[in-house]
Amino acid sequence: MKRFNLPLTAAISAAMLASSSCSDRNEWQANQNTRVCTDANGNRVEEGRCQQSDGGYNPYRWYYISHGGYIPYYGGPVGGGFYSAPAGTQGSYSTAPSSPPAGSVTRGGFGSIGSSHAGGGEGGGGGE
Image 1 (spheres, one colour):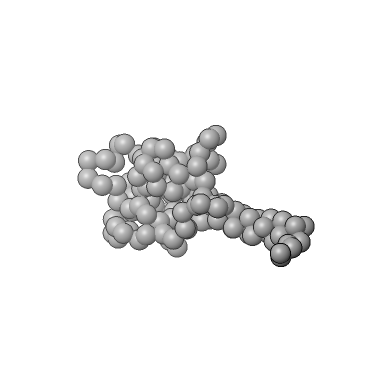
Image 2 (cartoon, rainbow, N blue to C red; image 1 turned 45 degrees about the vertical axis):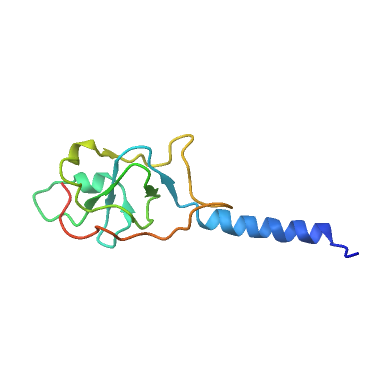
């Protein structure tokens, strides 16, 4: 009969849980069509930057994420959406809040979806 050192097993399990749940908690699931502002590198920035209009070039643009997609926190890379809203849907995208709403689904922990970002449809077109 094998004996397991329970404190050691619990410590290893806790370490695995901490490393997997903390490293991936960088986005939450959109409960509606949502837009976020991005910089030239495709990272989320404050939405006010996309709304700046001083008559000159604005390097920031809107990124559109459909219902069920994942919204990154500020500084995180966007993925799984589009730089141009799909035809006929421009008005149906609301601006994302700065932090996840209460009860939102975040990535991370056991049973979570991997954090790969599909790049489909990321081409062309400026924001609004």
